[in-house]
Length: 330
Image (cartoon, rainbow, N blue to C red; front, side, top):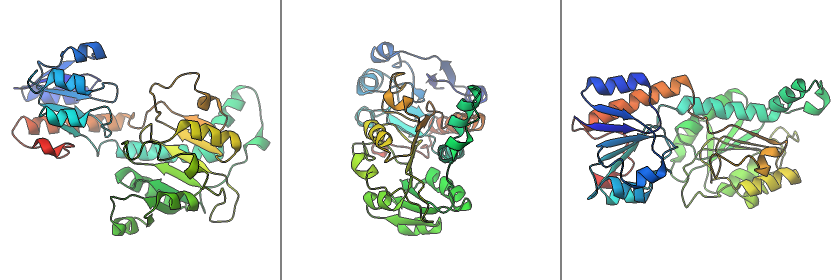
């Protein structure tokens, strides 16, 4: 049976599920020096979250001619912490669990959208300081506003369903999506990302981080936003990113907050994580944030663990996992 390293934690029930199938599961986090030295070379598979960075050096020291690593399982969706080219070159299969955390990220995104326009964080802080400052907390409604999606996959579609119920109009840029799928979800698909920024006062990011999408949300595009809703109300411009850090240019966001071009910026992910405590963006009153907790719910973690266990069991039973990322290895 297989020997499986779990470096960033896994639900106990999922570990038990693997062990019942006869697999050995070793639950231990490894620092980068140990990873580069080949600590994973004696394992058949490794399960990681975002904390463990599977760089080209780590993969070369663990798989291919150097070791026995056959499989990297990403417990979550994003694979930007895994060097896919190196994995493919070393014959290491990479797969993720794209369905398990969808609802949790949907709800966090909606939470940020609502909190940003109703000043929930500022209101809480004021109450703790003994202030009853209603006059400074006038917000705007989401109803009657245009919500722009950068990427319109499973999570974005879930956000869209809630946004429609709240009375929002949906627009999206996704070059990989067929127009009929967007229409089926009540969303107008645009061929230009700039057009989404021109039309929408609220932008939410739902794409992968790549060379193509790095700083896709930048000063130029933020500058295209008008601050006026479809209902004619001056509501300001609002940005939410619960996808991946690096897609949003954080310096451009801070500049836009300081100039007033952005009324709020809500980030769950950052270019460098953990983000520095002295990051000036965090200190701006128009900023609200969470420390990359999109999938951090009891329900999502249970689903991720079970989905990962099922995929590993399938793989070591001779089946191909459903969510392979680097299919060139097959």
